[in-house]
Structures are given as C-alpha cells and as structure tokens.
Length: 307
Ligand code: AMP
Ligand code: MG
Image (cartoon, rainbow, N blue to C red):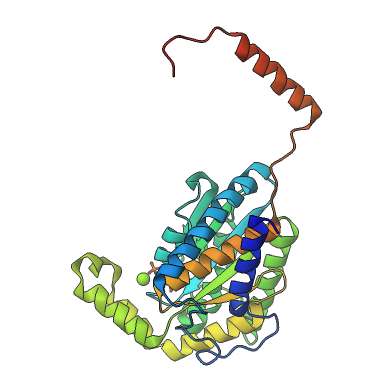
C-alpha cells in the first residue's frame, strides 16, 4: 500500500467512532463523551497526527482547486467556548488562503429576516474548487431559533410555516438542500464540537480572568448557559434527524482543544480523500503548446548574473 493510501486508511479508522449513523437516535450528553480521546495518550502524539492531516489537506486542496469542478462545505457548530475559532485557525493553517472561504453567522439582519431562512447561508456557499467553512451555519435555525422561539417570531413567517411540525419540516428542508448541493458537486460535512458543561464553565472563567481574553466574553454567554439542557436536547434532535448518507454529522469531543483540532482536521482530510480530486489532464493540444512555449523560452539568450 502506498503512503497516502496508508494514511487515508488510518484517518478513516480514526474518525469512524465520531460519525453519527443516519437514522440513529442520539441523546446528549450520554451518547458522546466530550473527554474521549481515542487511544491517543498524549498531546505530543496528537501534534504529530495533526501535522499529517494538515499536510494531506494542503495537497488535496491544491487538487480540488486545480480540478475546479467540485467544492466542499464544512459546517462547524458548538456551544459558546466550544472552540470553533481555534479549530478553524489550526486546521486551515497549512492551506492556501485563496482556496478557502470562511463565513461566520450572527444574529440575522433585517435584510436577512426579509428572506427565507436558508437565503443568507446559500449566499455564502463555496464555489467550485473551493473549501467553504461555516462558523455557525444553517443549523442555528434549528438550535438557537428553537431554544429561543422569539427568534422564530422575528422571521416574519406565514402561519403555516411556523406552526406545529416546524422543526421536523426544517430538518427535511435542510436535508433536501444538502442533498441538492451534494448532487451538484458540493460535498457537505458537519462537525459538532461537543463540550461538557464543566469545561465551558472553566473556559468562561478564563475569559474573565485573563485580560487578553476578556473581549471573547459577554454576559450573554452566561445567560445562554442557563439554557444548557434545552441546547443539549436541540443538538440531540438535530443530530438524530440530519445526519444523512450524503451529509453526515461528526460529534467531536471538544474538552481537549488539541484533540478536537485533530479530529476536525482528520474529518476534512477524509472528506477530500474520498472526493479524490485530480489535476486535470491538459490533453494533446495543450501539451503541444507547452512544448512550443518551452522551446521559445529556451532559445532566448539567458541573462548574465542570474543564479
Ligand atoms: P458569536 O459567534 O459569539 O459572535 O455569536 C453569534 C451569536 O449569533 C450567537 O449568540 C448565535 O446564537 C447568534 N445567532 C446565529 N445565528 C442565529 C440565528 N439564525 N438566529 C438568531 N441568532 C443567531
Ligand atoms: Mg460568542
């Protein structure tokens, strides 16, 4: 087996326990342990694996861009302090910034509320050859909007679109949308950074205690924390209904930042490996042109003084 095939196999095996099988009924917090770290015992082993993943990502991203036919969308969801920003920073550290587009989603604007709820996400989809990352995503529409129904009230929906069954309907619509994207060359992969309540408490305290981190904290974060159980329920329902064969969810243990980053990197690498984008074959005519150009360049007299 060649080197890439061996690494690909190792990565596939590593992320398998994190994937939510379609149709599986998930109950958080009991079904996924935020402190799980596979058989990786130390951060040092982990750093090595992360480097492997990042190297692979860089190569596959080059191929994806060169192929210019398909795109990848990685959706990141987590509770506050779950580590989304740091994960993006680390995982994408080795790739060409021109090939990546990161989009964050906050409270919707008046213009956004004037459209259907998927509109603002559709506007930020990656183009062909690109990796798109959603820092928060259309899943907020069945998370924060579900936990705080006043968000739904603000969406100016007609009665039939906000009544009974609205969440089941949104799951279906989201699944359909992702299937449409997949069918047209855009692979969707979803990562939930699964943080424990105690670890969130610690991270909030650090944000308060360390002056350089104060900007990351807001009193609203502690208010949201009061809805912890409702969020666990909303995440459980989301995972149970929207992990599909074409766009699976991965639940990444997030209490150890270094481990979460390895997992996210491995999931994205796995997705690209499965896609297996190829450098285009330029064809007979173009090869002939290359040969002509080469000849012309070689016939020029080299300038002196160039090493
Ligand atoms: P942050 O990521 O810390 O900048 O926070 C962004 C805030 O926007 C979070 O509190 C989210 O819950 C909120 N948010 C994101 N999407 C939506 C949405 N569709 N409806 C309401 N609030 C949202
Ligand atoms: Mg925040």
